[in-house]
Amino acid sequence: MSTTSLPGAELPVIGFIGLGSMGSGMVRNLQKAGYRLVVTDIRRESADEAVAAGATWADTAAAVATGSDVVITMLPTPRHVSDVVHGSDGILAGIADGGTWIDMSTSVPDVADRVRGDEAHRGLHILDAPVSGMSVGAANGMLQIFVGGDADDVDRLRPVFEAMGDPDRILHVGRHGAGYAVKLMINQLWFSHLVATAEVLAVGTAAGVDLGVLRDSLIASPANSNFIERDVLSILENGDYDEGFAIALACKDLGLSVDLARSVGVPTELSSLVEQVYRRAKASYGDRAGEMTPFKLYEDLLGTSLRLEPAMTAAAV
Ligand code: NAD
Picture 1 (cartoon, helix red, strand yellow):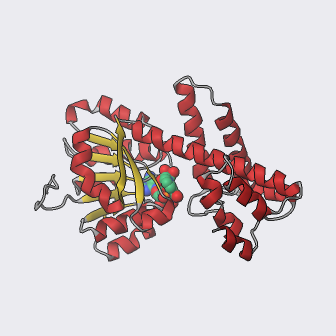
Picture 2 (tube, rainbow, N blue to C red):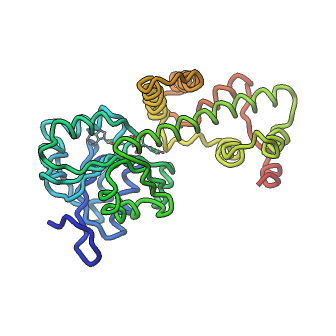
Picture 3 (cartoon, protein in one colour):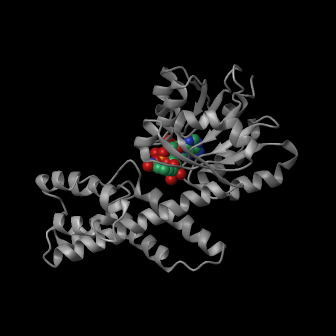
């Protein structure tokens, strides 16, 4: 089995674990780029499309690791990552000495740190490479990827990342763990933008200002943001709260972010408040509600949905 992706060499076989909202699109793009895949998931049906396109199904994470050169995990939480790595049929039971594991989940360094410590003698290459870009970015191969780890590994694996992400936005952000930290900070800021924007639009419209006029005024002001200019439109135009990213996972990310802040000794009053708003929305609308449903808490308070008139939308774009 090849272990290199030098020009002209056979492409490495990719093992992929976790074919959910994100992983399914990432696998499809790896296949399109010519990689052979070995896949598993606790939901067998999640791999149907990949298997139909030529991927090999494996019953366990250990079998994925045995049958591949590079193992990628795309799993919900650090606990899932730990189970898949350390379990009796886990990656460590199958991966060859000197093998490569890339965790692309939004997670924390603990699992990989433990592997680097306990399995140091095995010479494993481990990278954290979480992503931004939502399920649509995974589907169209335009993810942003934030990679933490050794530069040599990042260079060697760049073609694999480029099969899933935007080549201009695949960033080597530092040593092991830096990718996880960057990703958590991005989500923390974006969720904070969402809650702040919901508050402002709710108060302004309750005070009698037309929603479109209020939004246009904010865009023209020093308080403008990418969120109010672009991302909020999925709600204001379509009532779409992005069910492609479940609020349970958003709450997981916010919890990890606040934990990270605690571990490095930085007080984060605002992040903790945003986490509580998100947890309220999760309790109100259920684990599978979209990541933008905290906005709906404010709409429920107003007793009306915040929606732009179609003509106003056209004018604003
Ligand atoms: P998901 O819940 O849709 O998919 C996770 C997949 O992992 C599921 O198919 C599940 O069956 C599988 N799985 C769970 N435990 C497993 C195990 N023990 N063995 C094998 N498979 C297992 O989640 P997602 O939305 O694809 O997110 C995956 C990761 O990417 C999360 O860390 C999330 O925070 C992050 N992320 C998600 C988005 C998004 O928009 N959905 C965007 C950026 C990052």
